Length: 142
Image (cartoon, rainbow, N blue to C red; front, side, top):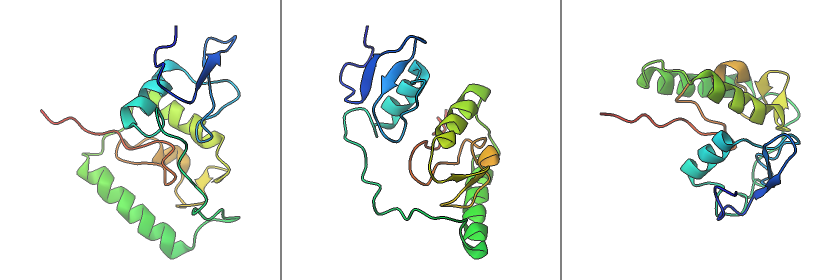
């Protein structure tokens, strides 16, 4: 049964129990699980919309300049401090890294767009991918 019949990217059930996803920002050969579909649906970015045009993004062959990396790091650290140094759970962390693993902007453990270390950036709840492939987890205040 298709849990999200309105998702224009949700494909057929694969032999491993996952669903094919035709969205170019998430497509993986092993498919996606319901948790990933829930994350996409919650953000509203992928479910009923065609893929975002990523052509304005500069495809870099190397890491950003040192000053850009320092600036990106300071912005990320500010959001991490503002969020109370909160990290995501293990499953969420691994989903983020899985998305990064298939990204052409990955270079070893670094992002070629922002220069961040992916194994660290994927851990913080307030951090997000510069391409929008995974977003910051919104804190629900009581």
